[in-house]
Structure formats: structure tokens, C-alpha cells
Length: 348
Image (spheres, rainbow, N blue to C red):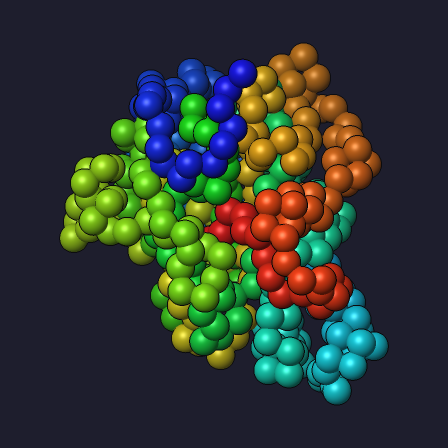
């Protein structure tokens, strides 16, 4: 059986052919709705990322915004009932409200992250036929949603939402080191340098290797990939290969799970909300420490299948991770409802 112990980059075998241009499937001669030009798919495999400036319909993302407003309201009501905040801050909108809640209850963004609510608007976006058509261009017709999806909130001037350099597979067990996992990073407003857009170390995926990460960065749970390690192990030139990736509302950044990336600090006045959604082929391990499996979205024989969200939602991955961590590292009892400790996940 494959070794599943987390070793943060210690691996004997490397798999460049899984992540570089050799892994690019044969592209369809006749494009399905939403599919990208061959040149963009080629860039994904050659550079490790590709920016799609305009892809989603306004209605798709606006529905996600409304869903987030409901999630924030649920959080505010919970904290208010528990006496943690004295004001619901209903007068503020999506891009300010959580900031004010955080001023009264630092760590509110972590509570929101740990709740892991998957509203219908997120499901619709994750499994939308046009988006799956693009994923099919990168991994083929058999597509499974990875169990690690995330709603991100980057409140202004907040260390806990500024994410250091990392490769996504460093958050997973060693079985993920030989699996191509595609991420769509989708901002819910224009993502800019000022509000903390992404940076990518282009071509850092070509070794097919997870470099050695350090844990943990600052006062957070994030693993960290040092720049010298990136240069020595992944042949990244930090002066030439780092690419700033501003993404307009309606666009997305597609990432190879081996490419190093980070998000910048938010020095604007607005919260930078984003979604990261992931897919891979279903026959491979998701590498998530056997805590939760993925959700099948499409197969070659059944491209229009009904996604079984009910079974997927039965397991709370955050609760499973907390239980595993608490067994390994016993700690004093805490009020779980208001506990701002987080055992970690893929973070951008």
C-alpha cells in the first residue's frame, strides 16, 4: 500500500510526465461550449498556469455572492447569540461586513472557513458543463471534484489571510504527488495587487516534484516554501519566473497542483472573496489522508450525470481533520463552535 504519512516534500520518485506537456490530452477538433483554445491548454502544461480573463456569466458569480452574504449573516448571528460580538453589522455589504465582525472577534474568517458550507450556487458553479468542458481539456472525460474546495475571505491587513509560497500537494499525502489536480481560482471581485491577487512561479511544476516545505508560517497554519528551496529544488528563477496574476470579475486562474504560488496581502479597503475548486481523474487517490473522497461529476460514458451531492456532504472534512489532529496532539477542551484553531488545508 502507498505510504500516506505526510512528509512535506520528501519523495523518492518524481513524476514530471504527469504534470508537463506530455500529460496534455488530445484536444477536440470541434470545441464544446466554454472550451479554451489549444494554445491556452498548452500554456497550462508548459507554464503551470493560465489566466482566463472572461469566462463566467455574471449571473453565476452573482449567485455565489448572494450565497456568501447568507453565510456571513449566519456567522454573525452565531457570534451575536454567543455574546462574542455586540453588533450584527447588517448595514455593511459583502466586501466590508466580515472586516467589522473581525474587529470584535479576531479569527472570524477562520470560523467561516471551517464551516465549509456548500450552497447550491457553489455546486452549480463547480459542476457547470462549460467549466467541466475546460477541465476535460486537461485531464480527459472522467472527472471527479476533489474534496478540498474552499471559499476564501481575505480581509484587509490580516496576516492569517496572506498565504506564503507553496505547492498544493504539500497539504496532501504522498499519493497526490503522482496525480494531476486542476484548480480553478475564481475571484468574486476584480482581484488586483492591492487586494491580494495571486503570484505564480512559472514552470516550477516541471520537475514533477514537491519541494520541502516548512511548517508553519508566522502565526498561521500555512506550510511555507522558502525561495531558496524553490530555486535549488524546482529550478525556479525568482527574478524572472514570478508572474503577478490579476484576474477580473468573471475570469479565473487555472493552476497545476505542482506549480508554486502564493497570494499577496490585502492592502485595500475591501475583502477579497474567492473560490478555489479542484478536479482530478477518479481512478487516482485524492491524497487527503483518507478523510474524505471526491465527488464524481462526469464520465466518458455518462457526461451528463447527476452529481451525488448528498453523499459528498455526509462527511465534514474539517470535523474529520480536527478529530485526527486532536488524537495526534491532545489539547485542552475548547468550545468548538468558537475555536479559531485550524488544522490546515490548501490555501491561496
